[in-house]
Image 1 (cartoon, rainbow, N blue to C red):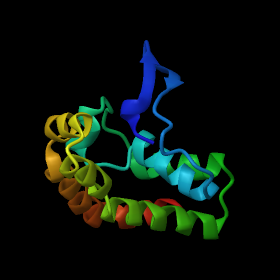
Image 2 (spheres, helix red, strand yellow):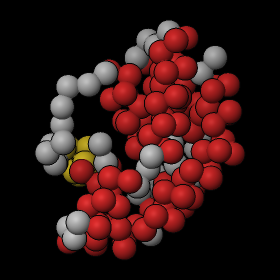
Image 3 (cartoon, helix red, strand yellow):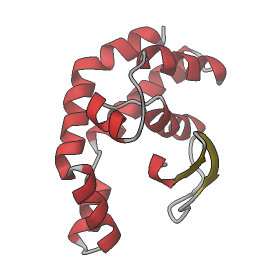
Image 4 (tube, rainbow, N blue to C red):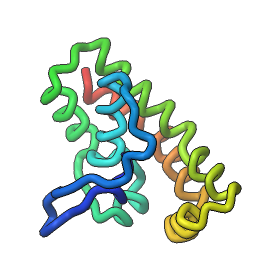
Length: 136
């Protein structure tokens, strides 16, 4: 899921686009991807580019976990999935750029290239313990 694929009208999500890579998956994985984009689990620069205002992101992730009734094991899995997703961030987009896809090339340039993903990884390294603590 990419926030760029959500259609907003007056600040309310009213539609989803781009299901070309949709497939059945683990519910906790899907929840982690939604949280990564909508909590957001991202550094301040990337979050601001997507229109998010500053907030207590660990508390927001806890709200997501509470709303979905995640037990302790699922909460640990949620953070582990986020960590893995952030560690691999940018690989898919980079491959599409290297393949010459003009849409991905434009997005890559507009969003700051690999630095966007590197910045997110540095931010996660500095903040992931706060998210783990918030989910206990």
